[in-house]
Length: 91
Ligand SMILES: [Zn+2]
Image (cartoon, rainbow, N blue to C red; front, side, top):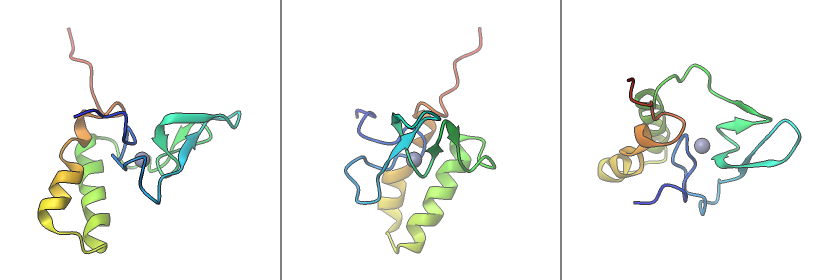
C-alpha cells in the first residue's frame, strides 16, 4: 500500500471530503499532513504522542460516525507506520 495518498499522521485519505492540506508558518502547504493534524508549522493534538494513541483516537472518531469494526481496523491499522510515528531503529 502506498502511504502518500494519506495524511502522514492520522491516515485521513487525501480524497476525503474533510481533507484540507496542512500549513506551514509562512502559509505554504505541507502535503504530508492534513489540517486537522498540522497547522502553521506545528502538530495539533500534542497529547497524542504515539501511533498507537493516534490509532485509538481515530478509532473513537470513526466509532462516533457509526463505522463498523472491520472498517475501523482497516482505516487505522497502518497509522503506526506513517511518517509522523515511524521511529528510526536505534543503532
Ligand atoms: Zn491528519
